[in-house]
Image 1 (cartoon, rainbow, N blue to C red):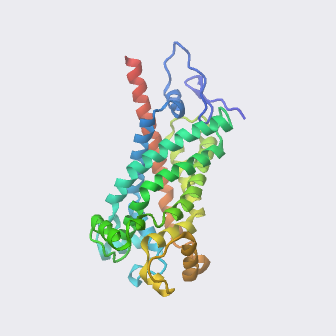
Image 2: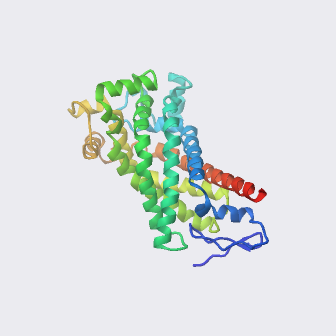
Image 3: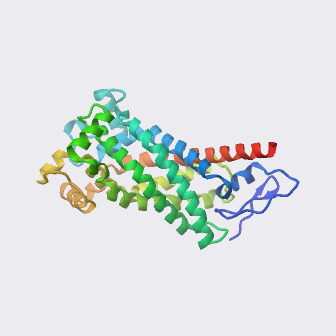
Length: 337
């Protein structure tokens, strides 16, 4: 179905990464046209810079809720760390453990999120365009979006997995680590370098379907509420929030397994006679079922959805803004020469 969108009286580019109609020779490009040329015209550096800023913003703004999510996914939590809602958990943590406790480990997350999201968005944009041109020339292929998001996840998680391990151990109740560096040294000394990637396969098993669902849902929502692909912050926020909620709810069981592998809960593991360190997605799935049954796979689902909705909304709105801003700035510099 062909859609025609008016921008300043001229036809806008069709949805997706395909090339739009050439602008009139005598008329300067309008703002909407500048933005719509972004998927094919923005540089690799622009995608990486916008992605890095978006990643840091996404993880830091929502970090306190992420801390709550990690604790609520604990399979055998300490009696002092049992929570019914996200609000109750945040309130209890602040009152009993200090105001800054929900932010413990945020520095390692910021260090990992910048480069991880820079590669993530750059890879996604490049692959989305190439695959869409091959599968559905000039259109928006949801298959291409899903594949591109999945491949981009491989790069993202390779950088973020060690940071996730350290972050989640810092977030747990009564964490024995005094600082990020102390946590890194202790894990390296007692469990070896492999501990930082023990949950990598599970992380990928979770994040590949998560990101495929996430990107397909985001691009689908954009087709529905922003078919002209103009710079429209409201549409980016709504699409990002819905995409995050759908993907988060669908992949919660895998996130619970990842949390168990990252934190290696001693109390939980000893209760099912597991000595040493738990490894592997299959073992994690069995252990979660032994400890909590079917409902165990959905521990923390409320916190995960509450975390992911604003998190992905922030990521997409910040990413789209910086992509628009940086490309517009380059175009203005080019036309002023």
